[in-house]
Length: 459
Ligand code: C2O
Ligand code: CU
Image (cartoon, rainbow, N blue to C red; front, side):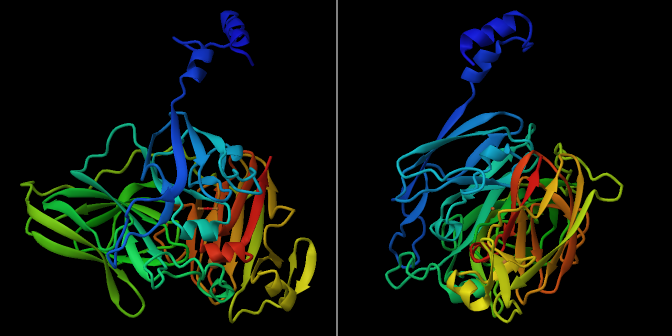
């Protein structure tokens, strides 16, 4: 529609936009330019040498709840890519899934993503084309959607956890990408851990401060088991969705790839000194960062933290679900997968392995032509996830948050990504949201590319 036509409509009173013509509003949408490129900056240097990664012309996206924005993504990388806004409820055409919601952006070209953040919280944007390779190159950004009123804390600290595989030359080991043996096991594991792309960074804080921590696990496949100092800690939000009442937390915090937590951490008055944050690897604790606490901020004892304001997420209706289905996750090393449908054909295990397919959802490997489920907006859906493999998986549903009955989590948390132990049987429930094609996959991203992916169709 031309501006002239819009003006005519609004003059006729058909577009009632108080104070401003619609055409002007469209013209004034804030636009942000995001260049995806090889990073020349020196991000972390375990051996003293800078490591070349893929990234963007900024380290972090900060958006505002309910404020529309256009993000112009310019692909300066040597291969096609897309960006997916993990955990955000967006229009399906903006979801950034290569081959499902859009064609990948060729090198040298651009794509305009139009978003209106519905929910405040901690999210991330990451490549969703050859994801196993592009994530390993670091092609992602943490994304914070600010609450309308800033949350009362003395300090905010973002911790983006990742692991990287470096070769002997201290650079990313890209030669080992696509290793089928790893795909059939726990996925690609790095040999160096970073926080905010730094190896064992020092973070500053003051004794007596209340810190809001935002945690994101951006690793391809590693489950992070984060041990924070034993101070009072509350969970404010999981995967960007606030808890009605912050919940006190003790012990390590487990994050599957792509999971996020917002925490409140109260640093005691007598905490001056250095405190390590650890990842509890199966054989030993590894220091990921050092929190250097300086002299007291001089604060009095604090009450328990207030909750974050609720997001406009529909609660689940108390009725029987409109759809119920079971999703059997099978395959992988030590699994019993003998055959599966791949691209419409039934293949035996040898042929599957030749196609680099090792895992299956309900007997189908890879993205199927037909959706797992068709539903209408507003319908209540229950999917019973059954991890019939010998491996843990972090299951992610695009464009939605769901409730789950899982022993691994306190009840009442909303998730967009859910860690499942082997053998787990976990019903998840959600209200079908925006129309479109929404992916459901394992976020141990090597498992996705080797079979664990499907989609639901909402219309
Ligand atoms: Cu984090 Cu399919 O995405
Ligand atoms: Cu998996």
